Length: 260
Image 1 (cartoon, rainbow, N blue to C red):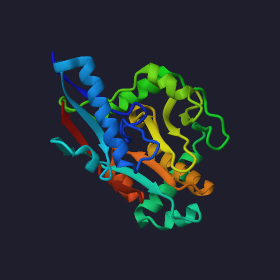
Image 2 (image 1 turned 120 degrees about the horizontal axis):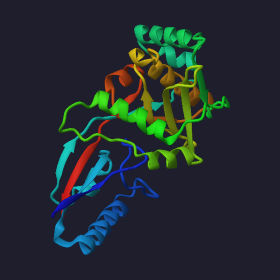
Image 3 (image 1 turned 60 degrees about the vertical axis):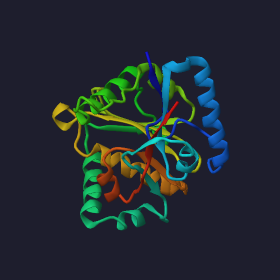
């Protein structure tokens, strides 16, 4: 049996599966890739036919393309760059319809008597979230958005969900009704300058959820970044046009397959 090693990032589909002490050191990246190829060849021999690297930015391509490779451009990674003195300035930078929509959604949801929003980010303790709940709701979202049989579905295993929820740098936002039912949640890797938005799961309004929760969450996170003076936030893949309308920059990324 032969196969391909998928060098992926378990923490987020927005990041590559290799972390460097100096991300700008292309020589170090090339050395890491070479060492990985040698180690895998020693372990698997001829059974291994290739290495696939995902979420590779343009700045890393020269280091990976020093040998023949198959390259495919994937969906862009959205990044919120904080250029604003306050949240109102951010809202004014958006198109009129999007700005009015966010303001309307925020007023409606925060006036909802049957909605509880909590977050460790701003000191309002969220309702407890179990790994099974987190993995199950994310699976629900993945199945809803990826219905083509040939597309790889990125499910969150409950063990990995538990590891993320237990990680000291992972914060969360939760949405529950007053009966305690989980309606939506998000996880955030709380980096000191450029945090990373992780998993997002939500019920549809016809399933008992609330319309506009994703936009509410994005607005709360943008405000949090601005209020703290952070450089921005990595928002990830999915819904690129909606993220562009929120003022996020879309950065291209590629998948690189290196024959072994």
